[in-house]
Length: 77
Image 1 (cartoon, rainbow, N blue to C red):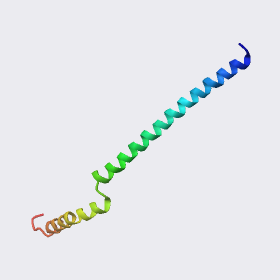
Image 2: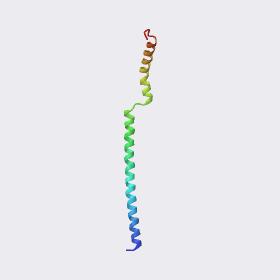
Image 3: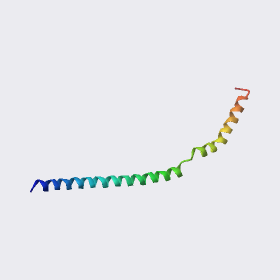
Image 4: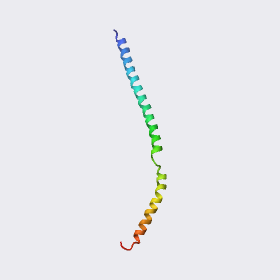
């Protein structure tokens, strides 16, 4: 066996290792894309946007302000 054949074999092994690593990296990126897509869908359906939450809390805050005003004018503090 000559040195040239050994070098060609080593280059082949290195290329095979790099190919395996590239395939694993590609599969990890594809899985990450799927996970992010599922997270985007979950966020859109499971959580309330901040501005909608503020609109929903306005009547509650108004009621609390009325209670606070009523307690301020109460005679037996």
